[in-house]
Length: 476
Ligand SMILES: Cc1ncc(COP(=O)(O)O)c(C=O)c1O
Image (cartoon, rainbow, N blue to C red):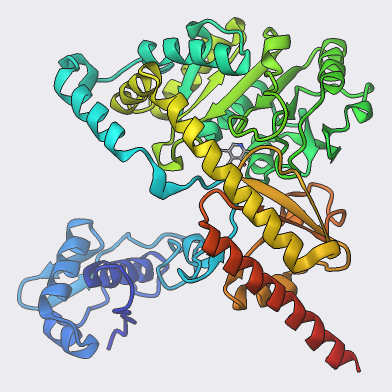
């Protein structure tokens, strides 16, 4: 009898579970051409599922050509459905990325870069969405241009000039699906296999992956409390671009001073490379005057990336890429081949949200909330760990860095900490050259209420204490 493991706890219909497992076994040759399958009645009774489940799975497999039914004699594996070296689809039984990254809902998760999701301006967004849906002409429901809606690019160019000193014409803007797609477009636009890209080290793991996937060699430049150490830029190399997060270095949090910005521009002129500026959460600056963009200093060489993920919501998948005009045509084509364009109706809602002043009001409101959460977190850290920690990178954004004098965060320690119901993120995960940040962690606080922050830090302290006393008793 054919045995198919069924798991009722999975969020996957039983028909699909049966269908996929029979299909895989035919493709990889475990079920051979002309082999007879059990009758639907037998299999349903064996697997303790309804007969309809088996009937539907068999029907689907027959329609796809994997099975044939022969009048009066039953269902058989069809000829020619074996595929040499067939790799099984990542099955629902093997652990997958989502499962591995699933976090218990009672865990206090200090993940960085998550805004306060419960404070998304739902009422205004609903009002504007409904106005757009009723007023916009029928053409808005059709295919659109790859660079994005003119209404959004126009308000964005005004807004960015006013708030970030970005110097661009609306024609230089391409609306993207978040900053992530902007980075993918940049890598396709500029990188050929074996080209070199200079990056801050540490820098978001995902960004490293995007550039490496296009075949680039990454050249790391270390970061200090002021961002990239531009004095270490190699003059004897020929990079395609230098990637920087000058407003708020991710993850270490420094802001690049003007002297280093100028050094960076000199470097790009000397080596004839571009600068790619990711301005991902510059809006939330709590100390000191706002810092203008690098793009405003050298618009001809800087590709500027921005995102609405932190100021509004990552679910919107709305970001933008601003390019020197000579790169626009190629970028439009890449965007078209990637996904035609970013959803037009959402772009229209966002355009109105910015034009009618809601965005600036929302940012003003959120900045106060985030500042108070940041202050609360710093206070908790100081009272809990006193002089055992050094806190930095907290002047901007939705996360800060805690450096412990003695504690290292190995994989084992992090697992023990998670058992205490708190999740923290080591800087080391984002390092290109490993081993330099063993005692530093990233704590994102934007999405956490004060009670959660307080409880999270208490749990972290208990977990670290527990990990250390256990280690000591094992040693003694
Ligand atoms: C450095 C950096 N830039 C940009 C982003 C935002 O990406 P997206 O706009 O695709 O959500 C992230 C994500 O957390 C990030 O870490």
